[in-house]
Length: 125
Image 1 (cartoon, rainbow, N blue to C red):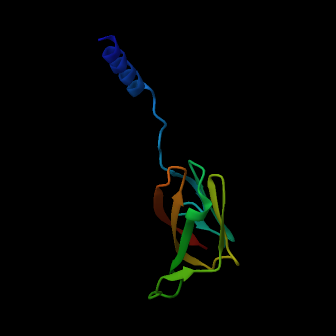
Image 2: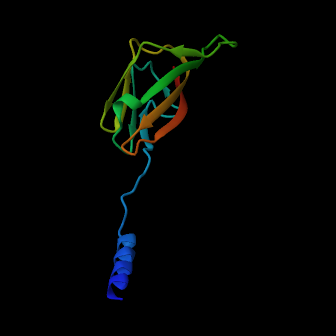
Image 3: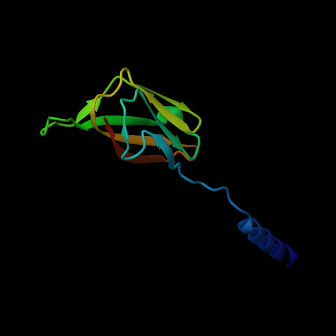
């Protein structure tokens, strides 16, 4: 009779121990920031709440509007490199972005192995 009571006590005690939190990475800051109007950047950086897994994290950048071209089709920006250092994802562009409006889509993976995605726009003046 003593063994079942001890087993029940052990199970209850284990259930009450704090479990490690499995949070997803959250975007903490970015440069350029969401809805910002900036001078021709050559790098983009996004900082998250957790360290990132480099091979599984990245960005897509699309020019969505260009001054003087009302019917401008979205144009993907190519040729940049990305690098992850801890919690920061940095994209280095081959040249400064031309004047226009951009959509930056990001996807990151942290230690919990869940892919998290987001996006925001900014303008280059």
